[in-house]
Length: 198
Image (cartoon, rainbow, N blue to C red; front, side, top):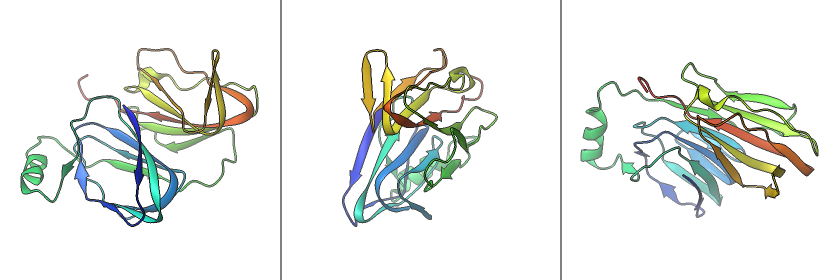
């Protein structure tokens, strides 16, 4: 599941948690996410049942992708006592989040942004000149990957995917091989962690 959130200037999304792992990528505007300043490009990972936030939009608002590899019934806000109690009752739960950014302009063909952690959670950034291709990491190392076009374009078969397009690669699929369009390509690869005993 992938969607773009556009928060109005000065608005706040209160601290909350979800039942699924997620990546968030700030693509426009700015503000704060918890204690972190965010602006394009900021990559934020939050594990399932990890409370985070609040997300405060700055004067220009803030826009970010939320990317999940499975169903989530919605935010459970920490302002509600039953949600705090539910979070405390989850056996073996641990707080897990990681942040990279705001990132400077890409300076190399491949950058490791987060990880890779032992369970496969990781994030990379690739920058390719026109017509070049790169073989991405093996998706079997995690529980699926999102590839998000940050600049330029991605050629995929007969399709051209432009800025803010994304592709999901399941863990049982072959490694993704992005090809840069005529204006080059800057793309993020965001890999979800494997679940214990899965």
